[in-house]
Structures are given as C-alpha cells and as structure tokens.
Image (cartoon, rainbow, N blue to C red):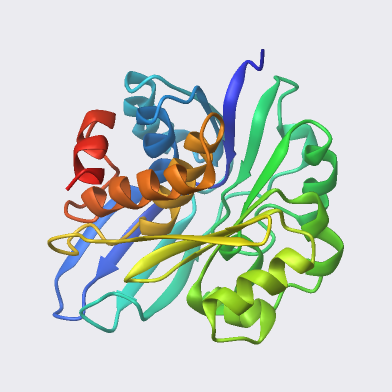
Length: 289
C-alpha cells in the first residue's frame, strides 16, 4: 500500500490578478494549492512538496487542516506572479513573473511511496525535465504542460515548445494541457487531433481543457464532459483542479466516470474564487443534474 496516493510537487505563488474590467485581487495560489484541495476532497491521501521563503511558510498551514500533508523547503524567495486577464472569459492573459523560488532537484523529493507524482509547475525550469524518468520508476507521473512550456524572459512569461517532449512523454502517464498548450506542442488547433499526437509520442492519458469542456484520450478512445459553471468568478485554477480530480478518481475508477466527476467538481469550483471547498457529495449531485 502506498503511503500517499498523490505527491504534488511545485511552487506556491503570491498571485496578483487583474481582471479585464480593472478589478484587482491578491491571493496565495499556485497549482499545488488548487490540485491538493481537489484531490484531497476526492478521497486521495496527498503530500504537497513546495518551496517558499521562511516568512511565507505559515500561509500553507490551512492545507494541513484539510488533511493534506505539506513539506515546505526553505527558499530565499517565494514565487510571485501577476496575471492580467484581457477578456471576460479569462482565456487570454498577460503573465509576469515577479519573483521565483528555487527550482527542485531529485534530492528534494522524499523517498516516501506514492502512486502518482504530479509535477505541477508554474514555469519551465522550476521542475527540470530530468526529474521525469527517475520519478516514473517510483510511480506514475502526472505532468502539467504549463510547467514545461511557460518560460520567463526578463520576467515576461511566454510559451515556447518543449524540446524534450518526445524523449520524456513515454515516461508520463497523465498529461494535462489546455487548447493553446496542445497547439504549441503539436502544431494542431484541433483538440482531438492534438491529443492523439501526444498519445502517439508516449503519454498514456492525455487531458485537454477548453472553456466549454474537457476531453481525455485513453487507449485511443476520447472521453469528454462539459463545464457548466453559472459564473466564472473562480476561473483561476480550472485546469489544476480538473487534472487533480481526474487523477484522484482514476486511482479506482474508469476514464469516463473520472472525467465526468472532474468536470462536475471543476464547474462548482469555477463559481467561487479560490480552491474547491465543496464536498464529494456536492460533486455527485452536480453529475446527476
């Protein structure tokens, strides 16, 4: 029996969010925040491994209250990112890296056993591609494409293709991209075609999120489920939430039920800012609507 179902590795971030209408908000976020909440509420035993400045470490205490184990490694700085959303649907944004914590090395990752190692990076270099192969020997690797495509160039965050993709994807079980990231990786603006290309390069389960739905390709079969939030006040963290819910559910369920569960949970999350704070019963009820 594994000690953890999912070990989530990545920086937390002191985020500044400016909406298209000028509204400004500041909060503590990052993929591991949204992902851990989603997976824990879905029944998984979760370990978060992150890096932050000493003065920011207590900001993660609330995760421990939600039955998530947290290991914070001291870093001179905590990552901080400014997001300026350019459209009402929050699909287009300008991203600036204000500060960054130290990158991870293999020696940072404890020897505890985990079914899944989720590489939940914010930008390229935070989680070096060299981590993927050794972690695949310990358990299944889940990879968010954002962490290998989004690069900091003088603080400005730009997307660049992942040079190591064909070498590394055979060691990745779960791969998550959004529509734009899938196009950068494959050259195709068709989500299904892009997923098939990524599967052909070795990723075993490929998720592609879109503002209308999420699809996942498993063993050559496409499964899909709609997003149906009543509003988008909690749009930030959509992909992180969905991916973690899916991986958590896949530990004991089939792809179709897992993707429908993940889409329902994510739809609820998008209706309120911050991490998902509902229950699994809320998700099941949403699935039956």
